[in-house]
Amino acid sequence: MDKVRLIYYHQAKICRDEQVVLQGADFELYSGEFVYLVGLVGSGKSTLLKTIYAEVPVQDGEAEVFDFNLRKIRYREIPLLRRRLGIVFQDFQLLTDRSVEKNLEFVLRATGWKERAAISERIEKTLKQVGMEKKAYRMPHELSGGEQQRVVIARALLNSPQIILADEPTGNLDPQTGKQIVALLHEICSEGTAVIMTTHNHYLVRDFPGRVLLCNEKQITDITDTIPVK
View 1 (cartoon, rainbow, N blue to C red):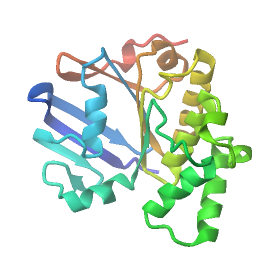
View 2: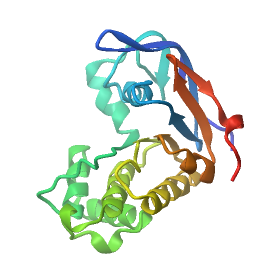
View 3: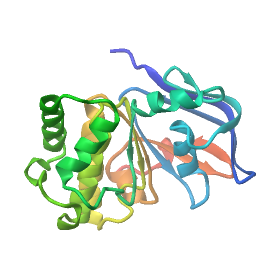
């Protein structure tokens, strides 16, 4: 099957608080790809992800995600863009006053799902996909960090996204749990969902190979060939 281009940035300029974060940035993502974004704190990794879901604007150059032109996207179009993306945060951002199942139901109803049977079926399927089907009635505080991150990934998968954006998804986890989460993301990628993951952990990049892009000195550089093979 031919790869489909999902993201295209050419000579993009991205700013935060009037400071240039990335300039002349070129970046493409194709279906089924796993891409790591690496670089120092403040190098633009998270900001680049935020431009993809239109939280931070692209100031100059070309920037397209799916068929949305990020330079011209209208406010009312942003929810349509985000429904085709799954976002995994480092700090989970689960609703602490409701169960795993109710967390996922909240997202589905917010994105237009109405039929209870369809909602239940979708929740069951995504929890099974991340190995959490037996924890649907648990509250977030009853789960380990790794289990909470699996729920967050399930939440990201609910609307069958074409791309998952994972911002330091292992940052709050111990090394072994972090490996399990990255292995899960690679498994999801192997089923056709593209993944972009920011990380400081070069061991994960080595142990779970993908394309590696370095954010440094306001540029994006492909350094895949420089990563040692395990």
